[in-house]
Image (cartoon, rainbow, N blue to C red; front, side, top):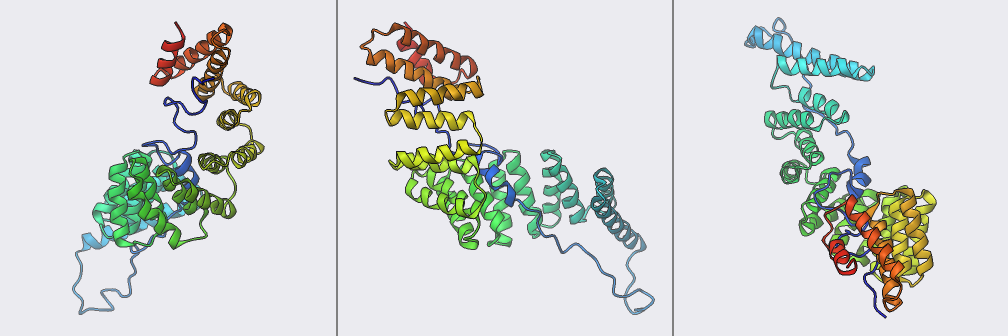
Length: 364
């Protein structure tokens, strides 16, 4: 008795929990670490006047136009920060942009404006302002790091890596920069490059759950699932449990042959809240454990939650084709239903070569 396929493992479906290539930080990993993309500590841009020209007549006077420019630009910068504290973001942004217009060399004005654009989701303008800050002051860690962050949010990962490397040249032990460059390398499909920085992040702060989860993601890309399980379990003890974290743990457990633990972990995901991804994953685990009726029910639940969730539609369709094969090709109803489901999946996502092949093979 043979199987057409194993649900949840077709070429057309990426493993549910593996990081997808070239995804912004808001995919399972980067979203997981978004909480650590904290506002950086800024400095080096404040000016203090310890004396006046009248107090120090021996000191050469600066050109009046330069002094006026500095005073006006700093005043606009402080005005923008006051508006921010008062929750008047539009006024704050106008003040920061005015500070830039007055003094194009004022690094902090670029950074403050970039922060507002980033919070608003306008990553292109944020990247432009952070990039200008990095150009004005190349040795400013905040400018280089935030430029990398904006580039990563724009999915310009190669450029993001370069910006993070510049930031790390200034401060090699910064936790967030090490974590983010690791996720950028993962997005580029370079887990070996990511490993160095993910390990360093854990060494910097071994109590950081996101850093542990980040390292686990690297191990998973390298198919080192025993190590991934170790890191994910430590992450689970250090941070609030999330479906994304538990899905990764379940997948790595299943890949190390611990099916029972994987199933229990998926049930924990469903206890946090039902989702089509969790039900489809549970169904695939149950199928591989020969619990076919329970697997079918899980696939159905996934489709009920999201009729467009094509991985679950594929899994149910493949299960029907297996029923056809197990009947020694007498169960034509199962064959027709399986092909119908796979065709429905292709209507949702045509780019599934393996599913196309199954329809061709069993749809005649």
